[in-house]
Length: 135
Image (tube, rainbow, N blue to C red; front, side, top):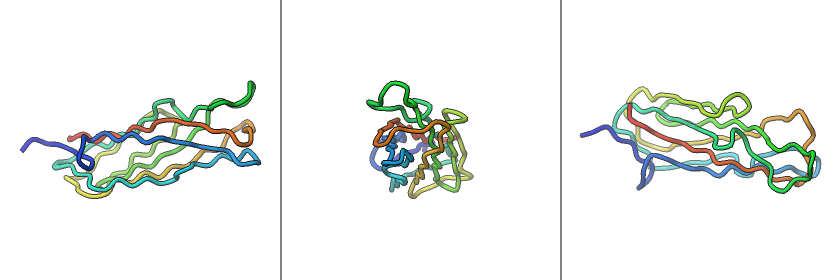
């Protein structure tokens, strides 16, 4: 049997829409802070990769002069491996499972603090791409 990974009934690539919004004080938070994907299987050791399409979440409709990007971290866990992505430091992170794995892939998201004040009621978006590849 060839080495393979699958998520649910499809391929081993998962795209997660990241939405970070600011409250009335301008404090950022992730709209959905945790995502769980059941039925993930890799029949051999696998590499878990987490990659940010935009190297952070980008502003949607903010006024000129406002910050245009908010960083976030994502911890992607599967089969005993954790790929830790920090978009303020890099655009991708990888981790390797120790063996074949079957179960749930989890993603925990956290908005990172900003140096400049954010406008109240702003929305920032990105796409987080999770890939599982046999090793």
